[in-house]
Image 1 (cartoon, rainbow, N blue to C red):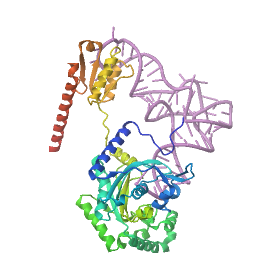
Image 2 (cartoon, rainbow, N blue to C red):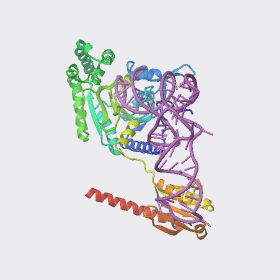
Image 3 (cartoon, rainbow, N blue to C red):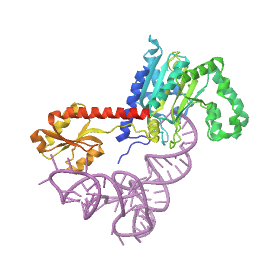
Image 4 (tube, rainbow, N blue to C red):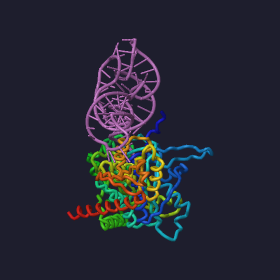
Length: 436
RNA sequence: GCGUUCUUGGUGAAGCGGUUAACACACCUGACUGUGACUCAGGCAUGCAUGGGUUCGAUCCCCAUAGAGCGCCCCA
């Protein structure tokens, strides 16, 4: 038996329903935010990612799926979404539009050659947003509000928003030097990983889980203390805008993000739910004021974020939030000699907008009733030769178990009325709950 | 890339170096030629991730491979 490649997964059953539901919600959400959909290729010239993500990051140095195409061109399956969207922004000259900023969103699979574990796959889906052209703190705050709003719409409660600022290039550089100065005399106290980080990317030392409790770690300089006036002002404005939107956040000086390109605002949303694995960052992002210039030689600031679908689905499962509605409106039970009539009836109902299923297995009556229950049918239609003869239908309300004989012509009207009543009932119940 | 645990029908799982691989759920058939529960009687893994090895004999012991889980690195 050939099995799926390591680190990939199939979507089916209720998980499929959940994912479709989430996708619908995020489409509607992006429409309300007035963002435009952008789709870019799943593979790009390898060089694009080297320039965008950074030569020293693990993502580029050891996690990409690289291949030569038949024309001997170096290609890479995209490990993240930002680079491609920026390439598209520049290549299609979106910077020359008369409406600024250009606000975009994307959704699709990304590829990283990593050892799989909970919340981490080799092919995984990201939803993300990139806003080009505005250097205002308002844009940062709006971007942060998107995942927060999405989680809220989905009913996810156990989340925490963490923000930090790396400042502009000048602040970031000053901070980097201060960090090196701080850690250099204590290098031998740090773990092996940190020694390597010291050389490659000193900012990441702050993230270390091993050396977390060391004194030199606690005394380490903070990014915020090294912000120049302008950077400080930007960061404060971001916070004011967040407050204006009632978004609860915490400042985490240790968030530096793994990608090299960030400036000013960086943020993460983490899941704080019981039973979640160690990969608890649900989404992350920040501002990148020089990345577009790096890639496309156009000096346009940007800010964005990306969100992992698999982790979102896991978080929803942890909180036992069930988004898929599999209830069937009608289940039709045919008999040996009425199958054609049954299928015709099914067709009519479907055309009228009902969710309908029937038996394709030649099951007996008992098994059919069980099927109807399993499929969570609200009504069961019995269609035997007696009914066909008299142009009648036997319809049974599967909740109340009441059974009626109705004229075939009256079926749609009967169902419309029944569902209308049920809706009214639900609204009423909802109101009562709220009032209490 | 490193460490560690695991892999038995459709599902949850028990199991021991030895001849029938428990038990439960689900499913199928019948008692019951048009009403679901319950009950009863049957049926349902020639097989224990794959490939080797040890052994008279392996689901069980050993090795390799693949996959999954957890942790690290890193990241969403």
